[in-house]
Length: 330
Image (cartoon, rainbow, N blue to C red; front, side, top):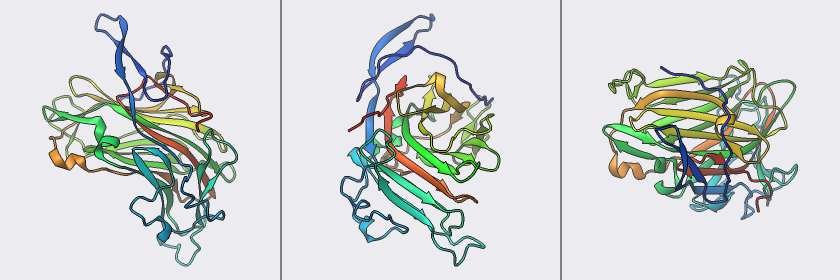
C-alpha cells in the first residue's frame, strides 16, 4: 500500500557543516546517539567562479561554445560541476517564436550565497525547458552512491537538498521540475500550474516495483500528489530536500521536504509529499553502477513568464536528521 505522509514533530539535534550526528531508534523504543555521520559527498554553490556567465551580464539564450569544455562549470565546491541547459524545441505551434529563455548569474536579491543562477522562461518561448544540470564527478559523488544491492533488491539510503526561489506573472504557479536517477530508480518532482499541486513520480524497469510485499514485482511506475493547493509562493526562498529510507526488509520510503528560507530543516516536520511501502527489484549491476547520472532542476514552459533562482545543491550519505542551512555561506 502506498501512503502519503504529513508532518510530525521530532527533536532537533545539532547540525554541522560537513557531518551530522544521527538519532537512531532502538527496538525497545529507547533512542541513543550513534557515531554515524552523514557525509556531504557533493557540495556545489551556483556562483560561477570562473565567470563563464558573469562575462555576459545580459545572459545566454542558447548553450554556446563557452560551455563546451570538459571541465567547464558554473559552480564552486566539491564532487561535481554544473552547466546550464536549454531545450529549444520547436514544439507544435511554437515554430518561429524567439527562444525567450535566459541564463544569468546574479547577486541580488540575496539568497545566502555569494551569487546564484537565475533562469528565465517566457510564456511565448519556443524553448520547452531551461534548467541547471548537476553532473557528479564520479559514482562516489553521485546518487548512485546511495544504493546497495541485497537479495535482489535495491537498498537506498540518503538524500539531497537545494535552495531555490521562483517568480511567476500573475497568480499562476511556476512550473518547476526536478528529474534524476538513483541507481535503478528514476524519479521526478514537479509542480503543476493547472492542478495547483506537487507531483512525485518514481519509475523503473517493467514490473520492477513491488507494492504487494511478495517481491515479485507488479508495477513500473508509482505516483503521489500533495493535497495542498500550492506550495511555491512567488518570490519566496525555499529549502527543498528529497530523501530515501530503506528498512532491513528492503521496503523503501521516499519523502520530499520543503521549508521557507535558507536555514536548517528538520525532516519530519517539513514533509510535503511521500511514497511509502514499495520495493525496487534489481540485481547488482556491477561496473555499470559506476555511471554518473546528471540531475536536472529547472522550469518547464507554461502560459506565464517565470524565473527560477538556484543557490546550492548537496548530496548526503547516509540521510541526516537535519539538513543544514546555507545562510551566509561563503
